[in-house]
Amino acid sequence: MNDVDLEVPNGRFVCLLGPSGCGKTTLLRMIAGLDLPTTGTISIDGEDITRLPTHKRNLGMVFQSLALFPHLTVGGNIAYALRIRGLSREEQASRVEELLTLVHLPGYGDRPVSKLSGGQRQRVAIARALAVSPRLFLLDEPLSALDAKLREAMQVELRQLQQQLGITTIVVTHDQREAMTMADTVIVMQSGEIRQAASPVEIYRKPTDAFVADFIGSTNLIDIGRDGDRAVLLGRPSAVVMPYGVSKATLSVRPEDVELTAPSPDLPEATITFVRDLGGAIEFFLDAGGTQVVAVTSPRARPQVTVGDRVGLRLDPARSVVLTR
Amino acid sequence: MRREPARGLLQHLPVIFPGLMLTVFFIVPFGTMVMVSFFRRQPGGFYVPDFVLANYARFLTPFFGNVLAFSLYLAVAVAVVSLVIAVPFTYLIARAPRQTQVIWLVALLSILSLSEVIIGFAWSTLLSRTAGITNLLVWLGLMGAPQALVPGFSAVLTGMVYQAMPYAVLVLYPSMVRLDPTLTEAARTLGASPLKAFFTVVLPALRTTLIATLIMAFIFALGSYLLPQILGRPSHWTLSVLITDQALYQSNMPFAAAMAVFLVLVSLALVTLTMFAGKKLEA
Image (tube, rainbow over all chains, first blue to last red; front, side):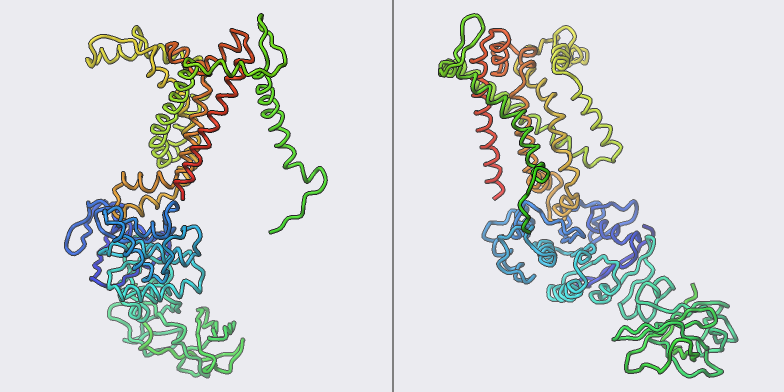
């Protein structure tokens, strides 16, 4: 973990996104106080908490394993933090019922946690973490144990819950769809460093480097050279403006921004090598003089081409990004 | 899922084999003991088949009542002290790096290779006035003069805890290692100090294992007959000592058998009670 400088505004939903081993979980554990940073400080609302023990930080955290207490019922799990703080039985019971309603599990208080389904256990873990209205809500890969359908539904639900409560939330995930669905701000990390921190759309549209461009969604990374102040793209002059002071760069173009047209002398040419028809979208794999390019179209805009055809590639300069590092 | 009923010898083998072992090594010896306990003793060391209750009637005296009470008291004390030491010890080992775990476990296992006699005499030397640890305390200036700590109740307790501890650790260790470490972390994020998390999450989550350990140490201590003789006074002798005495030195097999049967019944009752209490706790 090196040189991480991160500020999370109150009430925001932030996703730490990156491949495994990039330090995102370590960063979250440091915020929770479960790991200690060797240098640097962590503060909440201006109060330095770097050396404050975990149990005094007033956080809610959902673990990847969920870490539900096996010896307690659903209600016992949710009431744990309240019991530690010495609330009366009546206060505990009413708060537990309130939280169970919040996570759509009313009346589940007396069930043993071992009798719950994956999604229900997930909800109990969330309710338990929110029991004392923490000032920070931390989730470490919270949905990774769920199957794909349920995960997508829970993403939406989690986001709605966060907006309803207005609680500052930090989620660790390696799933870029999850980050795009839930976050106000996505923070892309790689080998202990923050590569980019921005809104999901900005990260997708304006990645700052090739790693971010490739990690968020899929993209075509094409090497470009300089000719005057314009870029040479796949051997043809293009409308893309080269930034000042570099002779070589990489152009990132999303597959949906690659348009296939009839071959023409002023457009880069490519041969179709494979067509993947997914029903909802069609992917064309192209070979442009040794560089692989992928184009995606909707079934309605499908060009009448097949494997082996030569086509022209039209790339919109406004929808592509020149990456210089 | 419904299973086909087992047919033929081969399919019944998984039931027959343990059943046979249980019969040969438990039911037959125990049955013999129960039978002998009703036999009549003859002067000169022999006994004849009979059905008399004299052997049982004999220990309905204050003397045997006291010995039984002391035996149970000692066994409970050994079980509780072993558990109180073994639980934090095992917890720390289970959280230590693999290498450290192996060293500690091997050291503990090596205790198991010592015979009860060696453990008894080692402790009686360690606790003696002439060569014991009190000399060390005198040398450190913590005590005025060396003292004999043996024979005595604490000496018996120390020796038996020393012997029972490795077993307690071995029973606790697998569950402690398997316990998800994020449970404690979750408790801490919810506002419990590490110590409070230990008492409100780790111990309750392990309570089945804790009860099993308690029962095992209890039964282990109940059967011990050498250490009370080596480290204790005659007032610290347990029922097991008396059984040995009657069986080996007084040649009164029926009376020894009657005491043994009684001891088994009392300990079974206590174990059942403990397990019942454990179930109640769970609900």
